[in-house]
Structures are given as structure tokens and as C-alpha cells.
Length: 328
Ligand code: SF4
Image 1 (cartoon, rainbow, N blue to C red):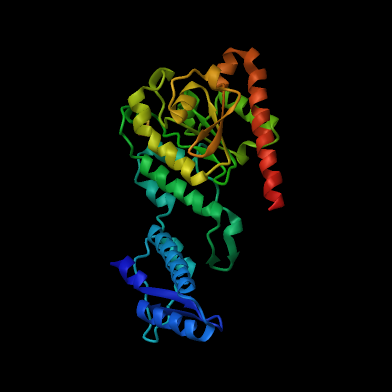
Image 2: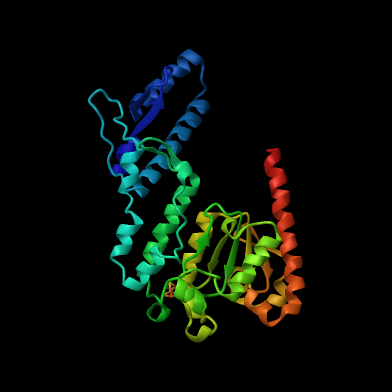
């Protein structure tokens, strides 16, 4: 009903910058008048209508996401626009959501192992006027998924975990790493790649001229398999939708699969990592490098040189993209 009402009305900007809300029939009449006075063709009118309706749909989707389900209209047929500050608070604050979770989950949500990036101060424009930047929007979407996952017990790992290990990093990351599953340290701290393998990953990231805070890091499984055993296929199937959502929100320019499970899962193949590594594949249109898992490198340090080769390709690829972006 909400959508129907909104689609029936369309916001248009008048010549003096004033925004008016027109019903469909008014809008058509307005366009037809435009056609008479400006010799607009019917095709142009259709395109104009399509673009206005598409903008309205996008606005409706955004507002629905924020829990806005009504728009108040004054009798003068003007939009009584709600300033964004009235919209943003309708999002459930993460602290409020976390309070109702078990104690062990609260620790990961608010303590040192938090997976949530600090608020982006750049979104504060002035006084109480707050606009949502792209970074803030993505951060909130990730928070929503994470809050949803705190109660996840779709597979038995939900019962044995200490903390959910969602993911960490920059929501606007151009490079996203995907590992296998949390280990003991990660399970305790609620953050991926924090043990010895994690320290090695940090060094790998720094070796290509980036900081850990520049990238995003997640695992295929969000809960630790007991005794660090390999993930089971059914656990991967049940947990994979969360990773897919993370990738869809972050939209990295490049993915990097670390180790067998991440590579085989994202590429839907049984090929060993040794034959997949060293070249770009594609995951849903995103270029994806495959390389060895840092934990493997700790046991096989001679293969570090291969990972360095792989990461140089990632670095060069991102560098080329930056060059292209700066020319646009
Ligand atoms: S591993 Fe994934 S699917 Fe299984 S309980 Fe944890 S979050 Fe849920």
C-alpha cells in the first residue's frame, strides 16, 4: 500500500527549485503541457517519467530500509519533508540490539574484538544534520547482518563457538580477503585473522603498500569448527549466504581467496589451491586471486615467495585500476 501510494505520487522540482508532489494524472498533464510548449516528443516524456519513477523507487527502498513507512502531506500538496536526523534514529542502535544477546556475544560486539568500524565522523555535516555517507550506509548494512547472525544456530557450530567471527575492516575496501574459518584466537576475540596466521596476513597486506584497516577480511565460516577441523560441506552451505551478502555490500574491486576452502567454495570447484593460485579468476564478475592460506605458510615458509608473486599481481591490478579511475 505504501509503495502504491508513493508510486502514484511523484516528486518534481519546479523551475524555482521548489519541490512539488504530483499525482500521476497531474504529472501526465504537466508533461503534456511541456510537450505543447517545448515540443517534447512522447518518447522523451516516457523517458522522463521512467527516470522519475525509478528515482522514487530508489528513495522508497532506502526509506523502507530505515523503517519509514509513511510520508506526511500537507493540504497544500507539498511534501512535509522529514529531515534525515528523524530518519536515522529509527535504525536500531547496535548497542540496543546487542544488549539482548548472550553475554559472550556482547563482549565481541562492544569489546576489543569488535567487528564494527567506528562511526565515520565525516558523515557529520553540521549541528544535528547528519547525512549518511556511502561508508556509513555500508557499515550499517553490515551491522544489520551481523546482528542477525548473532542468533544463528543453523549449524552445530553455533553451539560450540565462543564468539561469532563476522568480519573486520573497511566497508569501502577495494580489496577483500576471504579465509576459511575462525581458529582458537579468532573464536576468543571475535575477529578474523588475529593469531599468528593473522599477523602474517597483516605483513602480507603491508608488503603491498596497504594497511590492514584499508581492506576487509572475512571467512567462509563465521564460527570455529571444534579443534580447528576442516569445515564440513553442510556447514559451508549453511554459512555461505552470509559471506555472499558481505561481498555484495562491500563490492570490492578484487577478492583474494586464502587457501583451499575459500577458493573452492567461491569458485565452486574441487581443484586444489596449488593449481588455482597465481592467477585471477572471477567471482560474480569480481576478479579473484587465489593464494595460499597464511596458516599454510607458517608450516611451509618456502612457499612465501609464491604468495608474494600472487600479491604483487593484486597490487599491480589495483594500481592499474586506480590509474584508470583517476583518468575518469
Ligand atoms: S557457522 Fe555460520 S551457519 Fe553455522 S552457526 Fe555459525 S554463523 Fe550460523
